[in-house]
Structures are given as structure tokens and as C-alpha cells.
Amino acid sequence: MDSSEFRKRGKEMVDYIADYMETINLRRVTPDVEPGYLRDILPKKAPKKGEEFDEIMHDVDKAIMPGITHWQHSHFHAYFPAGNSYPSILGDMLSDAIGCVGFSWAASPACTELETVVLDWLGKMIGLPKVFMHEEEIGGGVIQGSASECVLVTLLAAREVAIKQLKNSFPFIDEGVLLTKLVAYSSKLAHSCVEKAGMLGFVKMRQLEVDDNYSLRGYTLERAIEEDRRLGLIPFYVCATLGTTACCSFDNIAEIGEVCSKENVWLHVDAAYAGNALICPEFQYLLKGVEMVTSININPNKWMLLNFDCSVMWYHWGIPLSRRFRSLKLWFVIRSYGVEGLQSYIRQHIRLAKLFETYVKNDARFEVMGKVTMGLGPNTLTQKLLHMINESGKLHMVPALINEYYVIRFAICTQNAEEADIEYAWRVISAEASELWSARAS
Ligand code: PLP
Image 1: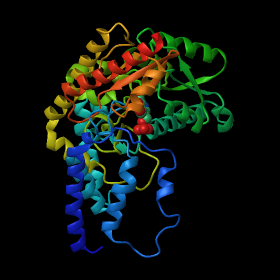
Image 2: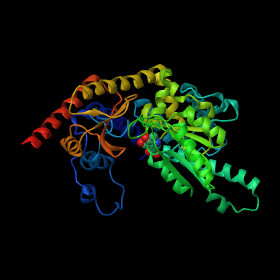
Image 3: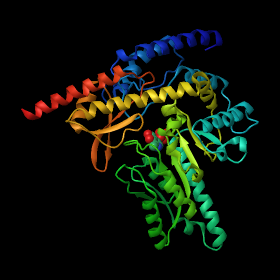
């Protein structure tokens, strides 16, 4: 493809994208296909000769679009919001075109410097202390590919610090032996990536009980650390969560931070989803104790209108050498919406989650589990009800297990969510529930 064809196809693609976004609600939210559908349609081998772009786009419509779950659909209430916005798409387009690989300042000064500037902006927006800022020349944020990567990187960094300190005290004991003594902690509601990080880092990971609000408390951690020290183990890392995946509960950072400071333990905060809401001052109370936090991650690609991938971590550098110019889209989005625009987007989602909560509370067939603080709220319904709703293709939600309860999560996801979407969702849920109830009665 030469540049004159690229101009033509690029403009067509922008139209295709805008049409897709504008008409997305005319589609089923989930695809109506069976596993393996695509393999049956596509050729078994790659084409020998290049094909016409029109043919490729024809197959996008015929083969790809029918197998898409439309995360940007107004009736998508599963998982979490998959950030998306036109400024972000444009930022990524430009980043792809520049195509630099920013592994050092010299490899592309703007790529390196913009990331430090924008992450200082974002750090200030969510209320992080100065120690996390690049401009202070001691800390600084860095963009990673995923929250899982952030958690792994911080666990490995904490492991390195712990082993170095132990080596100073016990220079003749092998690192491998010291490693067997290390123990890390999270709540039992932490994301599975925390357990995975423990496995990848070859350290023991203890999952601790939560209180009635599904929150990990300082006293629970303190007791676990005491027990483990008595057994000769060495606590070195805690991953607390702000906004658990199952029910958006919040660990008590101030209490956990005190224990970690006293015990010389690295405290990481995984705020993948909820951390974005910290741009609204009314939620910054959740960060009480942040001065005792060693590192923190949030995913703007979940809830700040940023397209995947854009996971932000303060502080520690990452695993890959090559890095994309991801700060460009973050810069585009923050500048296009302004802090106030982003705050009103978050507040609108939270307002709608509260509205959904009132529907659930006013219907005796349902129960709300946990507190609805942000845009994610859980409720207990049956597995069958969820299956019926998802099968209908009218709405999409996913389940979670909270203390052995099977619950349905309802997440506010779409960028321009409004009351009518919540009313529609409740009508669908309520009608399916009535059908299920009458089928059970008969
Ligand atoms: N942490 C929390 C609290 C999450 O909710 C999620 C994903 O839902 C993750 C981590 C994993 O995020 P990622 O897919 O970016 O690795």
C-alpha cells in the first residue's frame, strides 16, 4: 500500500469506525456464534499473493464482526469498562505511525519525556504524594501493558529488596534458601493476577480473610505476619486492592500501611479499576495512608476513556525493553476532556450505578451484596437467570463468587451511559426473572 492508497483507505477506515460506533446498538451485544466458527470460514493457509483491501474489509464484515462481543455497546454490563474514546484512538493511530521504540531517552526523547510529564499530571490528579512524581527525581510513573504486569513487577522488585537486605544480615546463606522463607499477602478477594505473581516469583502468597465489608483490615494482616514470623518465615510484600474485581470493595490502606511500615514490608496498591475514580476529590479518602504505600497501579484503559493498553504504575520500571509511545494517547485524552470532563464521566457512571442499586433494592426477589461505591455493584441471582439473560443477547453481564455466593455483577461500562440504559437493563433483568420464577412455580 502506498501513501496515496493509505490516505484513501485511512479516511474510509475512520468512516467505518465512526459508523460502527454510531450504530453499535443496532447489533446484538454478544455474538451468536459457536466455538470454531471462524476456522470454518477462513482459508486453511495464508494467501500467497497480496489481496485487495476491499476484499479484506469485506471479510471483516462477513467473518470478524459476527464474532465480536461489543464491549462499547450500551447494553454491555460485564467485567469492567473497556476504555474508548475518539481522542484515544487518534493518539494510538499517531503512535503507530511514528512507530518509535522508546527504550531509552535517546531512542526517542519525546516518547520518554512525555510519559514522565503526563504521569506526573495523572499522579497529581489522583492525589499521590510528591514522592511519586518524576519532577521530584526520586519516584515516577511508568506505563505498562496490564495491571497483572504491574503487580508482578512490584512483587519482583520487593523480592529483590528483601533478598538484598537478608544477604546483608546473612551473607553466607544462599539466595535460593532465603527465597523459601519469603511470604507475601493479599486479601482473598484480590485479583487472580496477585496469586499468579506469587507463583511466577516463587514466593508463598497468603490470601487473608476480609471483614463484613469485604475489606482487608490491618489487624488481620498483623495477626498473619505474627504467625508467619513464629514459623520462621519472612513477610516482605502486601498487595492491597482498591476496588476488588468481584464487588468493588476497598482494603483499608491506612491500617495496612501502618502494619507494613512497622514490619518493613513493601505495600503495593492494586487500584486497576477504582483508582481512576480518585481523580474525583470525593474519593481520595480511599487513599488515606498513601504516604505508607510503596507502589500503586491504576488502569486508565479501564475507566478513563483510554483504549487498551494503558496500565499506569508508580513506581518501578518494567520488564520489556521495547516500549510503545502510549503516553501520546493519554496526553490526547487528558487534554481533550480536561480533568473536569473526565470527572463528570466517572461521576455519571457512579450516579447510574446508584440508580441501578435502587431498582434492585426495590424488588424483593433480589439482594444487593456489598456497598455500591463506584460503577460496579453485585447482587445475588441464580446461575440460570444469568444464563437466560446472556442467551437473549439483549444484555451482557458476568458472575462472581463472593464468600461462596454466586452473584451477578452489573458494571456500568459504555462511554455515554445514560439513565435509559439502566432502565432498559432493569426491564430485561426483571422480565427474565419473572419468566424464571413462573417456570419454577409451574
Ligand atoms: N486487578 C484488578 C483489581 C482487576 O479488576 C483486574 C482486571 O479486571 C486486574 C487486576 C487485571 O488487569 P489486567 O487485565 O490489566 O492485567
